[in-house]
Structure formats: structure tokens, C-alpha cells
Image (cartoon, rainbow, N blue to C red):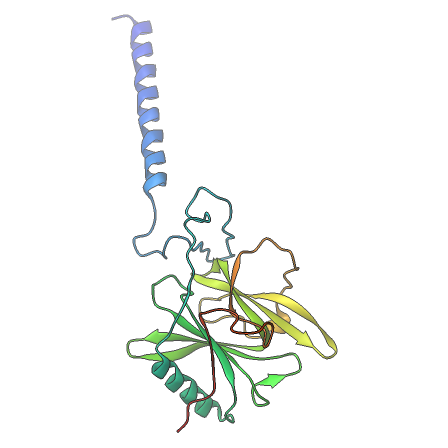
Length: 229
């Protein structure tokens, strides 16, 4: 066989190998994903939130499901009372909602405490409780929060971002985003970046503004008084 023929065969072989490698690479990308990753529909990024949007994909209107739902009333009431006692605060009203914030199929409790022991002119304490084994336990507390509290379609470190209102008195009221650090949500709402009204952020209202409309604002919202002894 001539040298020219040998070179041509070698060239063809290299093209075949390269093409096969590209095909395998593309197949790996298409089939990738963590076995233990979050549920479909929640975009996560360890460094920054990812906003879901558009249609035709998993985040399209047909695939979107509510993350809100009911909670075990006795368990969450007990957790709230234990938390109040641990902080040595007086009894007062609160609002709560159940929401699966991390896509594991188990709802967290989002609780906005109210009353003079929990609030200032710029807002109140928002506490997130997570269910561990047999009880709800607090994993995050954010101060200076006002309703509405909204759950977004974006997530940071697996947990969905929250949109809340903050400010009042000498400080202008703003709508800000709370992000999960890997350990807790932002600790002070006043220090967070403003989200302008009209921004393209899809949300569900977990806790609505008090007396914003006659009747309940959403079926998943539970307005409760502290449990009696």
C-alpha cells in the first residue's frame, strides 16, 4: 500500500475517533445529573441563584406545581412555643405557611412572628423551621421582615429564594430578596438588595399582607394564635 493511502487511512481513523469522542461527550452531558440532586423544577447554584423561565421545558407553566401546603398543626405549634420560650419572649400572634423550600418533598414552616417583642418599625422576625425526624426545628431567623412573604422559582444552595418587604419609619420600604447561605437565610432583611416592582420573578405568596382583602389570601396560609398551655 502506498504512503499516500496509509496517510489517508490514518486521517480517516482519527476523524472517526474524534467524532465518536464528541458523541460520547454529548451523550454524557445530556444524561448527566446528580442522583441525589433536588427535585425537577428547582434551579440551584452554589454561588448565585438561577431564575427559571420560558416555556416548553421543565419550568414551563404546565410543569409548575405549588410548593405550598398544610402542616402538622400540633407539631408546628409545639415548635413555635419552644422557640418562643428559648428566646424568652412574650406570647404574641404570628402568621405561618407550609412550603417545600428545598425540593425534598417535606414542607418547611415559614413563620412571621408579630408583637412588640418580635418587631420594630422596620419589620419583624421571620423564622424557618425544618422537620427533623419527629419535630420541627428552627434553621433560620431573619429580622426586619414585613409581609408579604413570597416563595420564588429561583434557588440558592438548594433552598428557594424568598421575597419580603422591609423598612418603615425613617427607612423607605423596599422589596428585597432573602437567599440561603448554606446554613440559613439572610439574617437582616434591611441589608439585602432591592428587587424592583415589575421584575420578572415568578412567586407564590406564602404570607400575605394583613387585611389586604376580605377573607383568606390563600388556602395554604394559616393564621394562628400561640398555643394555650
